[in-house]
Image (cartoon, rainbow, N blue to C red; front, side, top):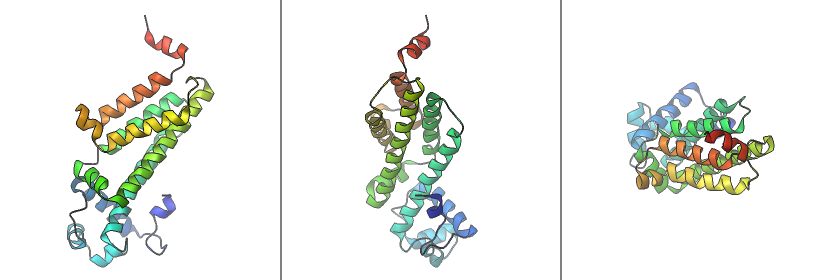
Length: 209
């Protein structure tokens, strides 16, 4: 989803300031409580607006949920792009990128992630985000190889493997099996990638005595 799409209401009209604020309010609500159990009446009551105001964002509760989920992931993508802007070292880029994912995901509570997994259209938005993250990591790996800080690797394969791990973290599978937090899991993923990709000379320098 592009930023232009994120600021459009059904029919292509730009969102008003009130609609943008409402979208952010719904995001915060969904992140804590999930969304499957809510009716439009519930959402209107919780956000102190009319159902017609909600319909202006999306024509149904299901489509509204998808829009809010997409808004959440779009916010994550924008934040991460800002954080890595201007960083040249691929190793630092990967570290900052994965740390940012961990920080952003800490906002999402278990009901939200569960509802995403259980609701196919929302899950599709989530999977789109995971594929985008894998593509980003692939580009970072290729940059590191080109710059000589990473050894020659199959960038696409490594990135897809990282994407599978990211999905496992985001869905709670890794946490439930290992007992670690998402932040700890992303730190471990960063260490795994950076340690495994480092050139022999870099690895030797980092090994010390």
